[in-house]
Image: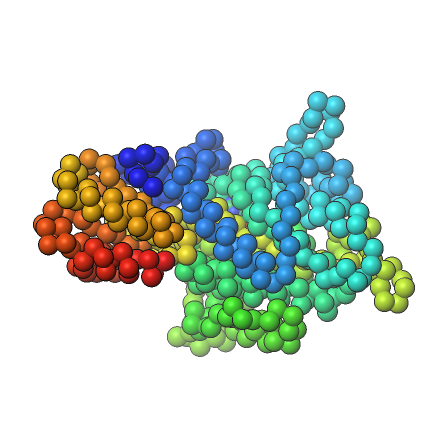
Length: 442
Ligand code: P5A
């Protein structure tokens, strides 16, 4: 992408409304625009990052055997009356009426709808286990939307729903998601700690929130420091291996970790002084096992091996992609701007032409741009006529991992510089070795 033809509305000034660094940087880097309280448009740079986040989420869901569907954002209130949650949900639910005065709502979550889909088609235990997920917008009329897309009213959620014949297999489905979440957040460069959590309006008694430690986090959390060094399950994990998965979950739940609602002072006091972490955190995922809470009132049952009817055991599993983007920035930035981890970077390489109008520089940049793009590298080429200083500032602000700096002095001897955004390290090399290296690193 040539910057001169792109849409990157960078802000020079710090926006006053932004209280935390991720919100400030997302606005300054032209990633999002607020349309009304807690409702945002995603501009091109933000959209690219959001797509990368969703790609990782999708790959890790698929790896466990979960299957992607797409449910609508607007739901009929009837389903919610069946489950009994229509009245419980309160003011957070945006209720609407269609032209026939039928009560509708903008979905804050989809347990009812997926249960309706399940009961329409599945009759036998032989179709189980089943886990269906989608990545879709949700609306919750939060009292205090704040921090940009971190807590918004309209937000994106990956929500998965599992169906099993009994509690034992439902716990295995829960464990599959538990491991998938560890892998998902790790691939985004985050250290997420599963913590025992309250189940709120979703229900059930087994639940973990996945929390990123961050000073600007909204929740108060307490955990053992060793979690920060635990190994992440590999891509070769066998998601059908019940005992194997259980042992990973046992390890990841063996030490103290709880959100403030579930905090137990006495148990925390048993954690050795030096290992006690009491901090703030951002909830990026939340998983629930709720048994037959929806299947009983909504009559979602299957015939078991015994020939009898069994209400299915369910769980639901949420990740917030539009919250993850600012969470990643909270964890990875410096004074100059964002530092994207490779897996979610909007572009892999940014080419900076230090002297626009200089024939040799332009020829070298065009050559680099064409060769890298043709090899499938995602490149943003700053071909504008801004001065070098402004280009450097933009590159640092938007945080593309590798900057290729092309200037007249270097080019005279066929050389360019590669700067690593994270470490600030610069290396001089020939145009050709730069191309080879950047293609190899793709
Ligand atoms: C689980 C999937 C649920 O709704 N039902 C379907 C269950 N869980 S949850 O904890 O309420 O939300 C799941 C994740 O969605 C993100 N999230 C938000 N992101 C931005 N703004 C919000 N207002 C918001 N509310 C929830 C979080 O990442 C949360 O873990």
